[in-house]
Structure formats: C-alpha cells, structure tokens
Image (tube, rainbow, N blue to C red):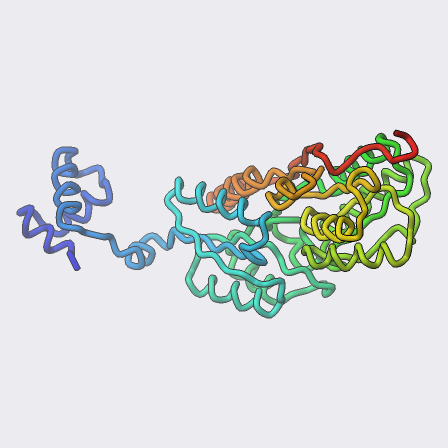
Length: 338
C-alpha cells in the first residue's frame, strides 16, 4: 500500500506538503499540486477514506434502504440516487428490508454503525404509532429522507412522494370518461399510506360522478403479480359484473390481466384494466397496460437534493411529484357503448 511518506520520498518534499497538495490547500502552489497529484496517481495512491472521515467527520457514505431491488419501481429510484450521489462525491450502501420491520431495523442500525452521512428510507409500514429505530435516528440527528409518504412512526422526517390520491383520481376519471360505471378496485397493503391514498382517489372520482362506491367491487390484493392473480380469481368467483378494473399498481394489474385472459376474457373488449407505476412488465405485457406513470428517476434526484439541503442545514419542504396517464391497449369503452 502506497503511503504519504512514500510519495514524499519520491517527490523530495515533506509529508505535510504532500497532504496539503492532495487536499488542495491554498498555501501550496498550483505547479507543486499538479506534480504531486500526478506522482500519487502514477504510484497508485488511494486515499484512506476512514482516516479522512475521522478528520472531516464526514464518511461520504449514504445509506439507502428499500424493500427489494426486484421491485421495478425501486430499480429506477435506486439508479437515480446512486447516480446523483456519485456526482456529488458520495458512495451509496444499499440494504433490503423485504418489507419485514425487524429486518428493516437491523438494516438501519448497521448503516448507522457505518456512520453514514445520510439515510434514504422506504419505510416498512406498520400499524404501530411508534418505532424505536426512528427515534434513535432522530436522537442521532442523522439527515434522513423518506421515499414515500410518512406514517405516524416516521412523521418527523421530510419525504419525497407522488401525489398518490390525485393520480388515482385521474385514473378513475379516465375510466369514467370512457363510459365505465362498474369499476372494480384491487387494493394495496392495508398498512401502506400510499395504498390508502390511491383508494381514496378512486372513491373520490366515483362520488364526483354521482356513483356510490360499492364494496362489492373492492377486492383486497397487495403489491405483487401473485396478489393480482388471487384478487382476480376472487372477482371472477363473486361475479361482480365489472366492466373495468383499476389496480393499485402495475404488478397487481398484470397478475389480474393474466388471470382474466386465461379464463377467455378479452382485454379490453370484455373488460378494461388500468395500473399504476409504468413498469416494464406492464408496458411489454401481451396487452400493453394503460397506467399512471410515476416519475421514478425524478423522485430519486429530488431525494438527493433534499438530502444535501439537510446536510448543509438549509430548510426543506415536502415535495409531491405528479403522475402522468399513459394510455395503451388495455382500456376501451365498455361493450354496450361500442
């Protein structure tokens, strides 16, 4: 391993001069800095980041905690955060919770032990009003940005989120304008605030259209393709006579659509389906999925921008990003209007 004193010996200067040159100290000439930096690179010198962290009290590390990178929504967000952080000179440590509270707490404590300069967290939602790990983060005063809406146990932290209710409202309004009146809804995880917001957007659109929300058209799903499959089977067994389905996300929509097609039900001729998220699985499904496009990359960039404000002690505000309707082949007017 090449040390500062090795470079100093080759350069014929003191170790202090080498240290100052590599730190761009103002009392070392530009010519000397350039010569020393070129020599350090030639010799293969790599700065000791842990030693630098002790001196500056900054590790140049971010912790990023998400449910799983197999979730296509998070793949784009992670890419954006890592890319923006890299531009700013930070490395990112990624951890997966698998939506398990105890694993999430373990991940956060491990990242805190690494003295990360900030945390990006997609919370593992729960019914409890408090979670001790979030109190510990507050006590440590670690800059933290939530990826998604806050819940009672993490409400003290700034968040970057989508206008969930508005986007879901617009999705339902789109189906209503096509002429659908019996719109089934496949809900998300019961503990997730974003799932509640999306359901409320659907209900608001129905009420504004003078249609009373019907519990017989609401089916508990979740967030995966398998959840969509199960919800679709329940919907078929209960014969609710829906002409359209609004799913809480694209994966649930794809699971539902696959099940309906397997039963000989045509999409969109017999029933329309709209998702939420705009993931590749929906875009390249055999009946390309109409959906609400989440600005995933912009969400990641906005999260890093908020993080840098927190680190520099600047005020931050809640940021809500809008989702855009993407119309594809899975939606059409109901049969009786064609």
